[in-house]
Length: 216
Image (cartoon, rainbow, N blue to C red):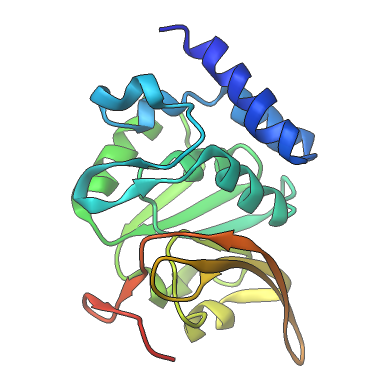
C-alpha cells in the first residue's frame, strides 16, 4: 500500500478542506505514519475519514478530530502537555512533534505497552508515560501549559483544572451518551473561559477505580 499517497489524500481531503490552518499541525500529520498505530488488519483504512477500533474496545480518533483538537491547543515548542488517554498513541506522537514534552496517562496496560513500542520504533524521546487513572492528572510534573483529554466526561475532572497553568488550554469532549461537545477551556485567575467547538463522539472517561463518570 502506498501510505505516503494515502496520507497526502487525507491531508487534502480531510484536513485542509475543513479549514485546519495551522501549518505545523498539517506538516506533522502529513508525515506521521498513522498506519503503525492501528491493528494490522485495518491498515488499509488507516487514513480514512472515520475513527477505527483498536484493542480493549477503544478507538483511534478520526484524523480530522485529531487535527482539530491539536490546532485548538495552540501549542508552542516550549509547551509541556498532559494527555489523558494514550490509546493508540497516535495523538501522543502528533503532540510530541509540536511541544517540548508530552506526559501521557493510560489506564489499560496493553494499550500503553503497544504505544511505547511504537514510540521507540519511531525514535520519539520526549514522551513520558504512566499507567494510571488519567482523571487524577500527573501532579509531579504540574502545572501544564496544555491538557488534552481523549475521552468524554460530563464535567472536567477537578484535579486537571488544578494542574493547568494560568492561561493554559484544556480540550475535552463534554457530555454523556453517544454525543458530546468538544470544549476548549482557558484557565483564568477567576475561573475557566469555555469555548464550544463542535459536536463529537468519544468513548467515556473511566475514573475512580474503573467507575464511569456519568454524573456531575
